[in-house]
Image 1: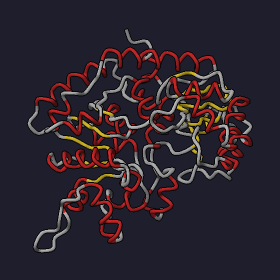
Image 2 (image 1 turned 30 degrees about the horizontal axis):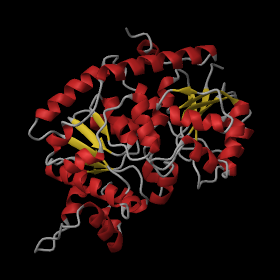
Image 3 (image 1 turned 90 degrees about the vertical axis):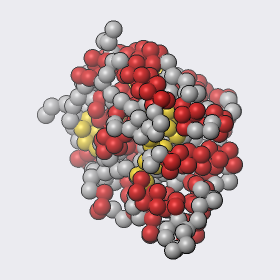
Image 4 (image 1 turned 180 degrees about the vertical axis):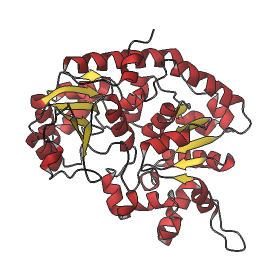
Length: 401
């Protein structure tokens, strides 16, 4: 049998999503469609057949998923965080009896928290400590998203890790992507009405967070002004339905709450037609169940901006400037590690227009290109040592001049 690998999670898409009730679909996505992006990247980096373990594909209880696999690939996310119970995942990792390859592991912390404070907090999370023990014993390769997560890992006893950001940064094969993005960003600044998408914050999570709520209102206003897409990744059932053409299924109270978060001044018209918020979401709301579809729809746009890291990565994979407005340790770490286009929330709130805000974007396209080349080379060398076949575009990116 040729070499094949088992992957935790989807291949970057939910197969036949309509077969799942909405609540189950959220579980398939891990409550966040952004997971599709790095799962998709993991399956594209490795040039070998893969079996995908999860609610959408092969069941966790089906032994055929792991049978004959060379390794278990674990596209990770914010798994080093408090307030979660990884008991089931830990049991699966420990019982797999395969080498583990971990991609993109990250530590989650509130804005301003130090690595030391984060380590102290995580030491009171038993399932996180057990996961670290399993990875230390079984993982043959672990990449983390940045220096902050690297320091947290070391403090928890996981020392052998590579800082490689998010694997989705390698989806676009163009070695000059950074230069292209910089040119497109400059062009967008000059446009009277650029085609845009906003990567949305989860409305109920920011409802009581005044600074983030003000930021989201400004971004949603620009989406309305420019007939732009409004892309939701998480936030629960109501948020998913609001941005996937099912706003009529949402309770009246949830409609009112989401509308208040996004645009408290909007009202229904005299004829009783739907709220302006709902009119926009009905036409331009998006909630993706396929990373490839997500990337494809970002391609024709001029700029994508917002506070969601994987919405930004979808844009970059399409060759469209994706501007990240960092708001916590996770998004800040990813932006810094990968040299992403960045914009401060203060610049957004202080800008009179979208063009004003875009004039404050910080981006060094050459640094971004150097980082991607170095990252692809590091990953290729590590996988070669482990006899893991690397996809041709990633290998070529690692040898770019």
